[in-house]
Length: 170
Image (cartoon, rainbow, N blue to C red; front, side):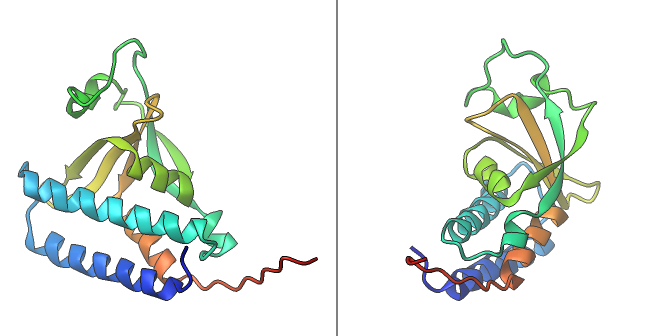
């Protein structure tokens, strides 16, 4: 249980600061260590966000906020996606026909925490743009989350002010 959300938010700020330093100094490549750092950043931030949410340490406004993404549908459901072929996700999803979509904080965190597909995208200068993700629980959709959207989410959590009162007695 989380009593003091400030400690968790400080850790979230530390993760964001470390990621900024890393991403500014590093050209994103196929290097496994670079992929690890990026995936770890998304995962740890999603874990902290979900813990704060489950402990009722985030405002109702933030919990209900929509975060933009692009959703891609499965091409064929009869092909199995697993740990042996997830990196060829373009075979399973129609990446030519993405549709704008919205995810709530909890759903986005769950997809990141339970991701089977986690694929980094970069611009022409090898700077991180975003990630393709899907959940190992639900493989009928794949989502693209822009890095800026995810950083907006992290900053929203860090700056969120919660004022709630609880009573066991009515």
